[in-house]
Length: 219
Image 1: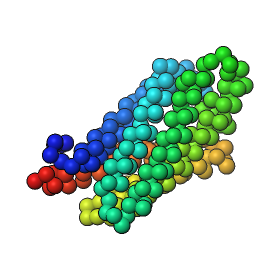
Image 2: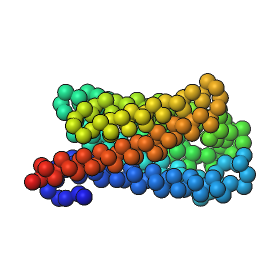
Image 3: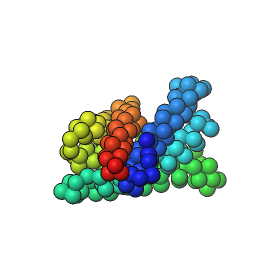
Image 4: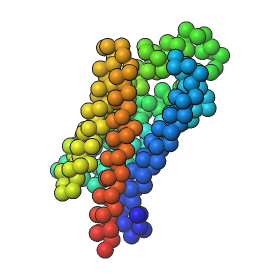
């Protein structure tokens, strides 16, 4: 529970953690509906589900950055080099992925890019394409580094589970990189578990820590 007398950083951490959990849950539901309504397994996800997913990603990524900022305020001074690095890498993830998805939403349907060859090479979420490569850079490289650094920045009593969940989410996301040299994007689904499932769970557990410490500070 968020109470007004808690430190602002704790309230911010709780709010962003809960926002991550909510947004990723909505994303998972939209993704499931999109997959279930495919005309055939070889078709991409159709609208409106695809557009909703794009918008949700552009909301999730900045919220993760905001959560990392709250975490940075939380950790002890001697570990803030790690937490600040986590903020930087998560911001890099957010900038890259938001750029990709904004470009897809605003440019891919323009007449300038109407050539199917251009659409396939630049915007399609089929390997290889520019959009797919950049999204892999964001979520399977920058994100896992941020998550692992966030885990490493935690070392206090009661933070062990959260620490290892952050690390696990990062390691799972790193697995997605294996799909690049193997040209097997099914392996990237393992990485999705890291940032769509494990990281939100870690964020919610961290929100509980923020809440407990905030209530102590307010007492």
